[in-house]
Length: 265
Figure: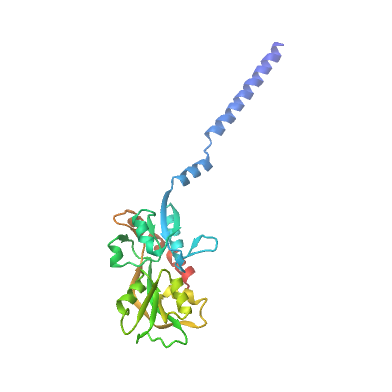
C-alpha cells in the first residue's frame, strides 16, 4: 500500500511539473499577433484630401474608392513614413478651406504652386511638372495664335483658369467660361457651347483617350513652369516629413514607376 502511494505521489508530482512547464511556456511566448496589432494601431495616421475628379491625377472609381497618380503617390509617401494614409475626396473649390479648417492634414490633388496659394498654405518640393494645351474640335477654325470672338473653357481656381482670365477674358470679343470641374468644361466643348478648352496636358491626353474622334490638341504646348506639390498648413512640420519621403521615393525609383504607370510616355 505504501509503495502504491509513493508511486502515485511521484506520478502526480511529475504531472504537476509538466503542466507547470506547459503553462509557463504558454505565458512567456511572445504574442506576435497582439504585438503586430498594437504596432499597427499606434501608427501615425495622416489624413489627405484629393479631388477625385481630375483623371489621371485623381478620380473616383465606380465603387466609390479613390484612384490615380495623386492617390498612389500619397500612399507611397505614407508607406515611406511608416504612417497610415486616410485619403478623402473634397470638391476643388473647398479643398484649401478644408485644409485650413483642419478637416485633413494635407492636400495631394494635382495642385500647382502659385503665389496666391502660398499666402495661405505651405508647399512641399514639387512631385510633378506640368504644361498646358488647347483642346478643340478637329474641324474647328480655332487658332491659339489668333484668338478672337470665341468662347474658351477651363476649370475654376486652376492655373489654366487663371491663365485664361489674365490673357483672354474680354479681349477681342473672347468670353472665358470657367467650370467647377474639367468634366463640365469638356462636356460644353462636346456640346458646342465652347470653342476650345485650356487644360493641363496630362488631363487633356487622358480625356482624348475616349474622345479622339472629333477632338485633338491644337497649337503648341504652353510651358508656364507649372510645379505640382503637396499643400499643408503654414508651419506644419509635416512638410519636412513629406519632403524627406519624396526624396526617398524619387531616389529609389518609385516616383518614376508611378508616373509611367499613370501617364505612360
